[in-house]
Length: 163
Image 1 (cartoon, one colour):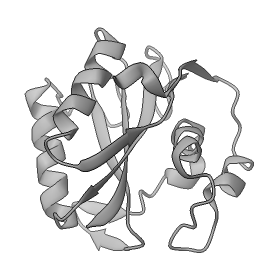
Image 2 (tube, rainbow, N blue to C red):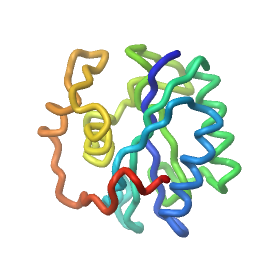
Image 3 (tube, rainbow, N blue to C red):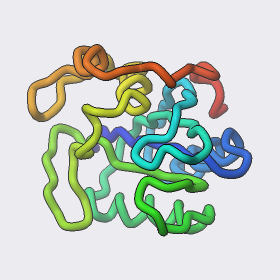
Image 4 (cartoon, rainbow, N blue to C red):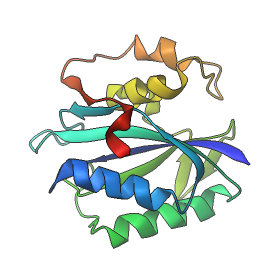
């Protein structure tokens, strides 16, 4: 079994209900799920859009990275995700942040997630679950968190939001 961390977020519709549904669907894909607190953040990349809700899900899997990606994208599709504008508004977005200590460089998938160290809305919830985690490049999640601006990020609910 491999420990994986997934970032989840969305900014359309009933954001909290959609995030809960995503976690429920991920229970069919991952074992031993734990979730971070729920955070609201300003949009990243394309900033003229509604605020996002974000969280990180930790779980274990026997699936290989590309098989896991296929399962995650099937969940996104089933929940109404439409891929149009990169970094644009979306009902749900699920990203593989980490897959154990593996490094994956594939045309469909890069692990660790290429923007992980730049996004407070990823690092803050990741730190909720694993502040002392060492990433494949040797950096620590908790230390990376101190290097990114956290203005525009606020905790809206503790880890019980997905129950």
